[in-house]
Length: 183
Image 1 (spheres, rainbow, N blue to C red):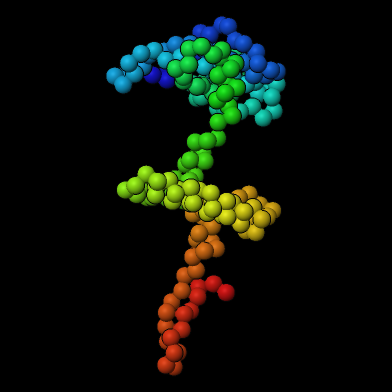
Image 2 (image 1 turned 45 degrees about the horizontal axis):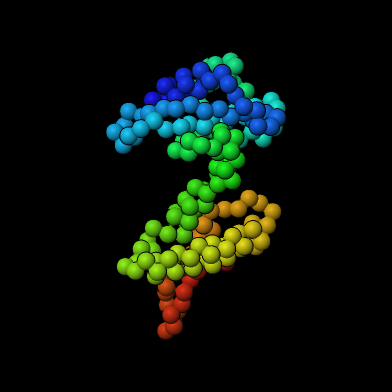
C-alpha cells in the first residue's frame, strides 16, 4: 500500500508553491480496504530542507533511495473536501496539526478514557474539569516550578518524581512511624 502511494506522489508533476520551500499537490486514491467505499482526495505537502531550516513533516523511508526526494519532508492529508484548493486545505489543517498530540496527552496522562459516566452532561463536566483545571495546573507546575530551565516532562514522570513518595509504615516504641524513602 505504501509503495502505491509513494509511486503516486512521485508521479506528481504539478506542484503549487505556497511560500519559499513549501509546495502542495493532490491526487485521488481508493484503498483496497472495504471500509473505503470511494476514492479519497490526498493533499501532499513537501517542504524543502535546503530552503527551510525547520522543515516539518517526515521523510518516509521509501524516499531515501530516490536522489531527487532526499531534500524533502512530506506530509499527507486525506480529505473529502472536493471544493477547496490544495493550498486552502493545507492552511486549514495545519492550524490543527498538534491537536492529536493534545488529545493523546489528555487520554494517556490524565485518564480521560476512564471518565465515562451514564449521563452525557456529567461526563462532559468531569472531562472539562479534568482538562481545564488539572491540565492547566500540571502544565503551570511543570513549566514554572519543576522544570524551569529544562524541557517539560510527561505527567507519568512528574507523578513518580514529585507526587508519589514511597514510604514504609513501622513503629518506634509504641508509636506508629511513617518512614519516607526520600529526604
